Image (tube, rainbow, N blue to C red; front, side, top):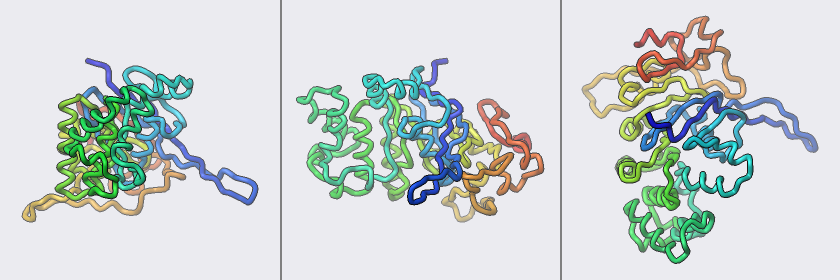
Length: 331
């Protein structure tokens, strides 16, 4: 088998909670945003990272790209250590990573500079990376706009002149400008109408087929996840609790949290009865996560073992991993 394009091992990101005085600053706690996350993404594959808001999905993505300084762990891209490269200060190697690894941010209204034309927004990458001669900038801008089904004349407009769906296409075009092999899509359709969502998802799928791009697709919308992803990793309170091929995860859910997430997906059939799982309480604070299994305060199957011992992410079915002491109950 070929080596994965991206390998993430024991990724950790903690944020200090600081109490500020007039003169002094005092550390009062730690936010466990990401706590020992492992996953990999193969060439031309889409891995979906799903979970409730605040579970650490976006933070994990930013740490993978070194947009946030990691607390611990390792990330390898094409066999090269990403963190070590950024820490050594080799500018050429860092820019190479930035060209290969791009991100489409969640909010298309906040991620585009309102004072810049679309041409300036996309061509800014050429100014930074200097990988395209200046006389070819215009042709390249037009090419990436065509890739996302926009016209050449759109390059002279400003972001406020576009709809939400068009802005997200521009964000994708900006990511494509440096010809990346890996793109992180951080809830790219969450703020869009349902009809526009389908267009963006189809666009991402077409680009993957055409260019072999790998995606880390972050979302809490399991309907879009099922449409676009090859594998799914379910995240809860900074940890991955289940990981499997997309079809396997939706048909054979081994973790109670995954069962609740899938049960919440609306089904467009009024005659079909579905089991709704209402989880009690709120997500615990990441400043003081529960001992043992982090899901046990909300889990309907929790026992004393769950309260005392943290379950490991283990393989229960072929290619199907879960972090639950009673996963065999659902196999």
